Image (cartoon, rainbow, N blue to C red; front, top):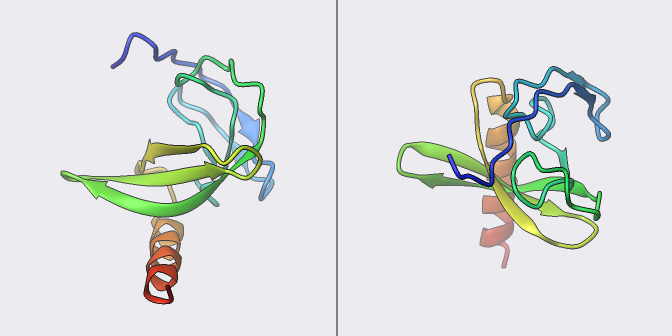
Length: 106
C-alpha cells in the first residue's frame, strides 16, 4: 500500500441511492449502485474540496482484478477503484455493458 493511503473506517449514506454503507476502512463507493463522492486526493485523506459525485463509467480488468472507473460529474476527474466482493456484481456487469455499447455506437 502507498504511504499516501489512509485507512478510514466510516459509515455513510449513499447520496445516489440512499443505501446505508458500512465502511471497512477501504470503502470509497456504494456497493449497491457503485457511485461515490470525490472527497479524496489520495485514498482516505478527505482533502479534495470538489465534493462532486463520482459516476461509475466503465470497468477495466488488469491481471486478475477488476476496476470500476469513476468520473466526477463536477470536475471530470477519473479514478479507478478495485471491485470487491461487497460490490453488486450485477451492477458491475451493467456498467461494463453500457460502456461496451457506447463504444460500439461510436
